[in-house]
Length: 545
Image (cartoon, rainbow, N blue to C red):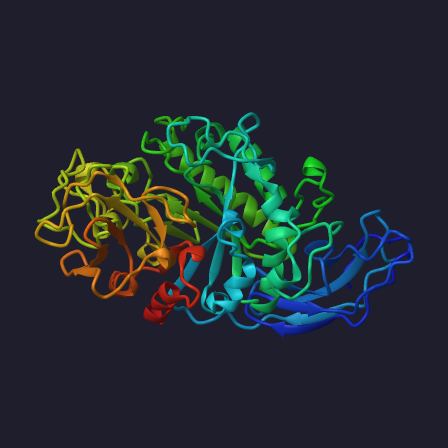
């Protein structure tokens, strides 16, 4: 039977432990609530043990133990504890469950959930379930966690970034949002299971709600994304040496995989040893971009990044596998990779696939209102167009488009020194659920396409950034929406404003393309930008089948 620490008995031992649902990679456990006689309030949480290891922690009486191996027997037991350290004298009576066979291979679908979505958008993990997304997606990626500017390790803090200021070289230094991660008191109406967070519980906020979501949808896996546009400044430093890579990787696994998120960040009691154990099923590396000056102003980069990125992935794979073997799990390692051939050239495309379960290619943001005066263009043209007025990307003759990016990874682009060699079956095609826009655009010969502009569109209420809008914010009427059959791309033009992004037709075209190229599937950035009906997500998952 499972073993674990003994307690002082001031909390009753959980009873009635049962496996209520079993899938190919998860077991949902439930048990009866323990009581606390220690005068320290209610039971704070429960730790789930298997093979002497903590495999999950729950704030309530149900949890999904995920990342399990298929067709494997696991024995679990539960112990209750409170914030003062009191615990049930023993673990519960054990329960054994055998996971099902691995599901049949199919097209893969994932999407990002923004850490900050709970603010202006009031988009909580609950809505991943109520929108139908949780039942249709394979993975939800939680974005983003930062790299400490001094120690170059994973950390938590409560400090706002200067993300909207692209000219600030220190925009993300020391920034983080532990409050959104695991301190925010989520009200009952915004929670997944109708239960409000209690201030003293070890885990609140997004992390606790995502844990509750997995208990309802055990086939859904969660990964945590490290970096992103604003938080990639110190990747080069973290990856620079064997010692720095080991320090960085071990800190991230300790914090986000073993769940040892720090307690008492700015005085909040949440956090502590194993408080987030079992929440995440893997780690996503979003370094924007190794070896390239094309990232955020002030990012550190070096020629050595090309090899060091590969070595960083290798270290993550090694340490994730080592920890996984100790708890009977397989953890995902993924990466968000650039789509521009000038940035792909700084990657060892023929080597990195060996360490990744899959890679998300960020096939969007190829054009936008950072080119303030235009010409207007498609954010993510699927194919090249002879009408595209932009110049080719040096040193070759290709322009930015999805097809060129996929070719770079799989078959290579010799003109750019890109060898290819990344397995198509591990490549996931990205689609944006947000749109980019210009204003002051004349109609020209084709409803504003490839025309000059006077600047970015005015900021929308949800995005709060000029030249950017969520799909759900746009008035995409039949009269204002247009289609380019050459690039298989949509745009919106109202006589002054030009918006570029993916509507359902464009998403379906990209799904058909992904299938035709033998790619793993598709991912979206990000869920909060879709409408309440899940129009874009349904187009993606429905097209993938």
